[in-house]
Image (cartoon, rainbow, N blue to C red; front, side, top):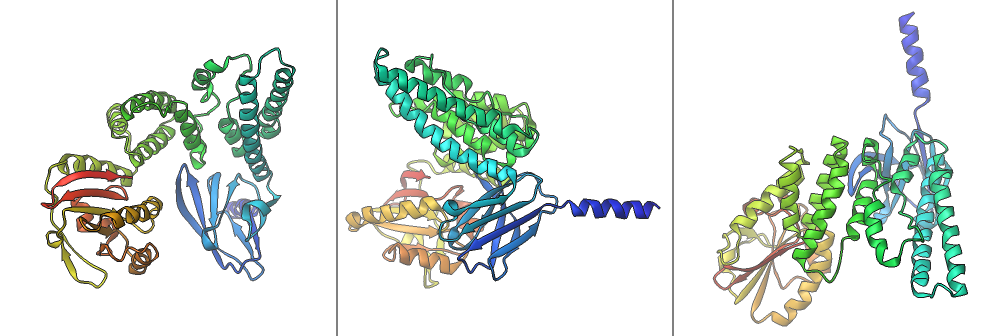
Length: 439
């Protein structure tokens, strides 16, 4: 009897497994990678297989509710939400975003409707607010514009608070509630609106909802909030003080949930690391990570450790450590055999988007400095073909190109405490550091 009952439970459970059907038209796609998303991170969840008609049928095996991304041919991607319901999506490979149709899944219909509404509301409200700010209050057009803005705000809030909340416990309902844009009360003077946004923009974010880690909401709301503290007229030191105040607000709110707190701490540290805000990173480490014993992602923790050691050992005026690496022909090249008035030493990866943008710009500068400067480009690639293709595509053949194909595990990368790409050191003829930078 117990066996029959157990079998019945298993059968019933299996019958409710959620299905995903994706159809990509005008494509010869065979497989696609399925990733789960968390902030700006994505983790491979599975590989999906398509039949000859461009259809894929997939069963979610106990997946967490949240955002997923399907990466298909030519770096095209399709985002959707898994919210404990069957999903059926179709799109044309030639225009994924523009042709996307949700045939089944109310959560995904709401998600895409929300994205469209958010974009429209932001554009229209910003334009109308600009008109209101510049027109005299006794002008008829001022009154008309005010009424139109009020209508747009009501439409937006109707979707956020009513239309999307028919099933308030669903992932999409909770996501929209937290992800909604702030609505500015028209009675607030223009010169007071920035402080108003600083005061209310995080009020609707549910920092105690662990599931929302599996989305972009905490990352997006953090960026939105930090932007309110940005001022192009401030120096970097002044800007760091402003951002530090914003960080305190964000992390203080996140402390309500240890997992969300960890998630946001990692996100902020990694974000400020990429933009070189060392003082803010130190502040977060001292006042949150160390103080509250926050466990960071192992890769991020290693990166921070390397950042600290590099800052201590690779100071302006210090002589750079020597190394020897193979060039494109496999010949070992020693650093101290490269002679020039100045040497630009770059650590990069062909897979790094910033490197792909920056190195061609450096190439243009190098063309004007060839007589006095040499560039040593150390690739952190693991695939030789990727490395050589990058050199060829970007016309870097007149640089000293080196790589041992060990990636982040290269002894030189570890010896130099490289923690981000690209990392650059400008050296004088005696191999002393006269400048350094990282992105």
